Image (tube, rainbow, N blue to C red; front, side, top):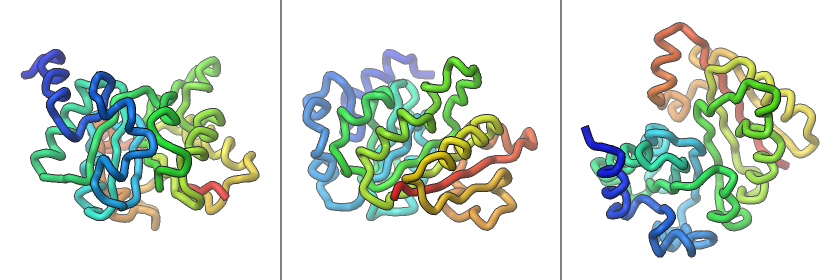
Length: 217
């Protein structure tokens, strides 16, 4: 099994990984279409982990660019490798903290966001760290084009309920749709059927998968 150091070294050589230390990193904001060498829409997966969703979506939609975002280089190494193996030129991985999102994407540069099984940060003192907290939503609103969809998949009931409460209390949210049992819902489409490693584990344990999607006005 490759060590973290060897994975980090491989990431430095991969075109589909954008990370600190590479010349492209400092100038990527506002230049993602040039990076992909096309004008296709750009959709983000935040906290992408091993990149299963980024790779799965890129395979489904060859005329959409997908960027998996995660701070863990050893994790995005796998998604990067899988995207290369499938020759997916529309999949890339960005190694940053989600709080740095606005440093890497210009205003309205993205056309959608997926948040797949994020850390729920259950303690009340950790609310600001939840990827559906108000401070993150404001960030998403800046980088997204109008009427772009944001999707959340989670096993965590508390995060699901928290997210719905936050969204219902905002005046700039529209087309809020949700289910606490995705697999038996009409919302279970081809994109929602992509599974991460975490989702497979939770599903095998009989835990319902929750799903939320919405747009900003």
